[in-house]
Image 1 (cartoon, rainbow, N blue to C red):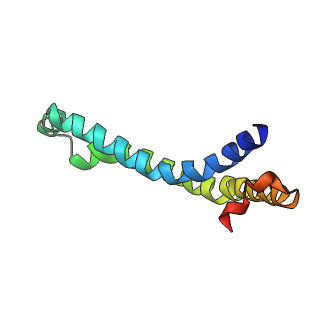
Image 2: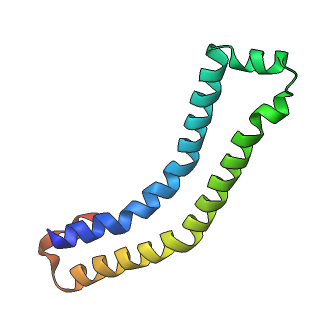
Image 3: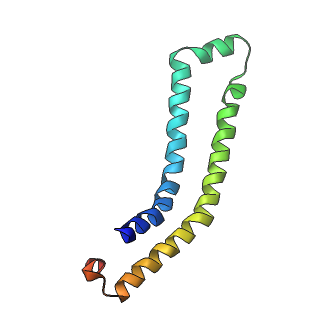
Length: 104
């Protein structure tokens, strides 16, 4: 059970790196959609605020999350993958009870 938990924790960074872009896209769509549905964007534009100024915080946040995701994908994910692969190789060498022999 401990081994499976370690494998799960070492696989999690790879899955998180795939979900970062989709999470940012969904948050952006939900946020802008809510502003649009309640006519907040129209009210801001009627007050003289340019559209670029309205979406600037969203763009900056998306850029920050993208850079954090890039760092995460290039530093954390490879280290976690190496650890995961080492555990799998150790289990294969020790016999493993057929746990990883199904992939061959």
